[in-house]
Image 1 (cartoon, rainbow, N blue to C red):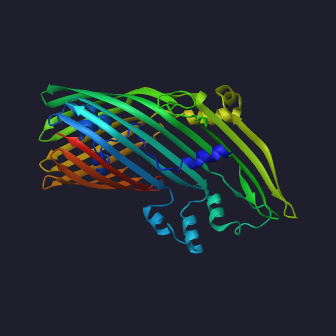
Image 2 (image 1 turned 90 degrees about the vertical axis):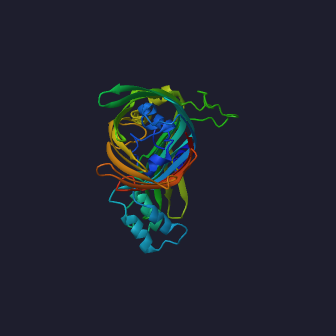
Image 3 (image 1 turned 120 degrees about the vertical axis):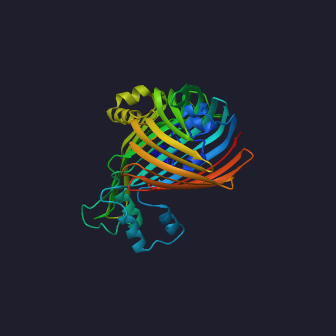
Length: 446
C-alpha cells in the first residue's frame, strides 16, 4: 500500500485548471467567466472560435504564459486557512473545525489549475496549447476527529474510529488546439461561425478509496487498515521521460480528439450574441495497460503485555489489464474510474456589449455530459470591465450554479501599446466547492 499512499499524497499537490484546455485569459477570470461573447484573439480558442471572425478582432495576438491555480475545501474557506495556519489549536478551535463538517460527511481538499504557455492568432486563425490538472482528497469525519482529539472521545468497548468516506481522485492532461472562423453578412447583422479542433494527451489518472479501516483502543489497541488504489503507472526504472511515449516512461497514457463549434452574431451598437458547443464531437480514451491496481488489508493488535502483532490479510498488486479484469474488485474500480474519463460536453450561450470604455458580458452554461473536469450541471455568469484612462481595466463578475457554489471575482491590469498584463482573483463560496482561484497572465494584442 506504500505506492497507494504516495498516490493519495500526490493528489494534494497544487497543480498547473479543471477544464480540458487551460483558459488563456486572466481577464475572463476577473469577469467570472462571462466571456463567451467577449473573447479576443487567442482567447477565442478556449471560449468561442467564432469570435475570430467578428469585426473589431485583433489582426495579431500572442498569448504569453497565463497561469491560474485554485485551492479549496468543502469545510474551510480562505479565512479559516489564514486563522489556523502556523497556530496552536485549542480544544475550542478543534471543535469548531469538526463542527464545520456535517454528520457522516468527509473533509475534502482540492487543488487544481492550468498553465497556458502560448497562444497565437492571425486574423481568423488561432492556436493555443495548455496543460490542466486536478487533485481531490476526501478524509472521513471520524478520521478528522481522531487526528484532532486522539482516541479520548471513544474509550468504550466496541467503539471504533473509521475512515468511511475517505478517498482521492486526480488527473492531468495537455491539449493543443487550433481554431478557424468565417464571417457571413445577414440582414440583421454579421454572423460568424467557427470551429476549434483539439488533440489531448492524458498524462495521469488515479483513484483511491477506503475498504473498511477501523481503529479502536479498548480493552487494548486494535486496528484494521484497508484501502485500494488504481493509477497510471510510471516506471521507477525510467532514466528519461518521453512526453509522447506510450510505455511506462512515456507521458501519453491517454489521448483524444474533439471539436468545439461556435457562432457569434453582431447586431450593431456593440452588441454580440453567441453560442458554442464544447466537445460537440470526439472523445477521450485511456490506455488500460498503463493502469496498476493495489489493495492492502492489515490487522494490528496489542495484547495485555503491550506486544503488537501485525497480520497482512490481503496484499494485491495487479500490473496488467488482464489481471485487473480478472479480479472483480479491481475491475469494478477500473470501470468506475473510466466511466467519466473523457471531458465534459457543454453548451454555452451569452451576450457582450462594448460601449466606449465599458464592457458588459453575461453567459449561461449547460452540461450535456459529465466528464473528468467536473463542470457544474448549469451555471449563469455576469461581468463588467471599465478601462480607467483607457489603459487601466477594472473588472468584476459573479457566477452561480443554482445552489452549490457562488463565485465573486475581480481583476485589474495594464493595457498599453498592445501589451496586456492582467491579474484576477475569485472567491468561491457554497457547501460543495468553496475556495479561492488566482490568475496571472501576459499577452500582446494588436
